[in-house]
Image (cartoon, rainbow, N blue to C red; front, side, top):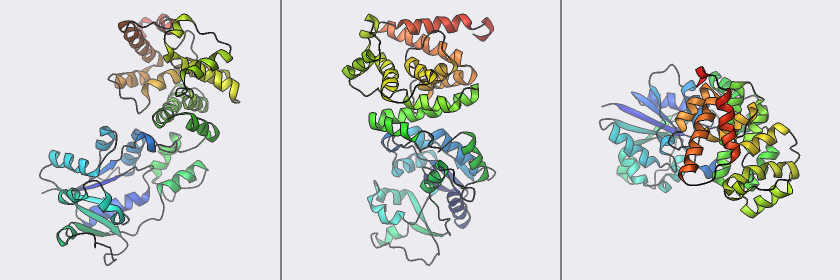
Length: 388
């Protein structure tokens, strides 16, 4: 029978305390393998400081590289929504019916374990392995029956006294965290610009104006835009800020959007009046210009054009437009195709997305904004035959 450890967490970021606990559990329990499982973070719990699921997964891969006992699983991330340990264990039990499972946790888990969803079933599915400083440490098992107590295994592990929250705060303020992070993980964080709260004032602005789901999306677009900017040679800070602000007026009532657009000097056309879904982009540009100190023409243009596109888009326009399609939380059927195209060429991704948009609107009998048609034509005409 294969002995399989399961070590889950947000890993935001994964640090040397996580690694030490996982290694200690693997050695002391003689585990054949340990599944490292980054959690999917529900949108209502996602602050700007949370790295995306792909980044957290990749950091785990970097930290546990070189040891064949460790496997990285995206099971909980792929499930999405709220993820319960009992559901994860049941899935793994079906996938690996001959395995014996060991759930690796911190010692503070015991204080709340009886509040976990279907905790009694968890005990029937896996041994619960709790980290303690000494094997003789007194853990409080009084809430459990004698049979249930047999399902708990203490692991002697002298923990590194640091939390991911403290590490994120230090990174945001330029602190030295090298003693707490694997060198490869720290390099990954620096290379991908993670955890730096570069725009706290504008972060607070979008937090005040957007609901949890839209806020999660805006953070995702800001990260995607930064990565695209680094890839294609644009100003990464501008791209990140434009991505953060692109939907600033998305949750505002339609009448408020219309009012801001008009105050900004634009009279809605008949096509625009017939499709209010495009208003938030125009309202966002006008709001930022009228009510904030954002006066960078490139950022304002990227916010305005992120929904419809336009002819003659700048590099930043294209980046924010595509980042809106490929941000990590997006899960529409063709999203992986668009992500692959974006990695190859912004223009190819724009052709694909504008084609989809035009077909979708036409199929629903809805008006198509002229800027979207102009965007498609402009990109198509300027692509060479070999690029199509």
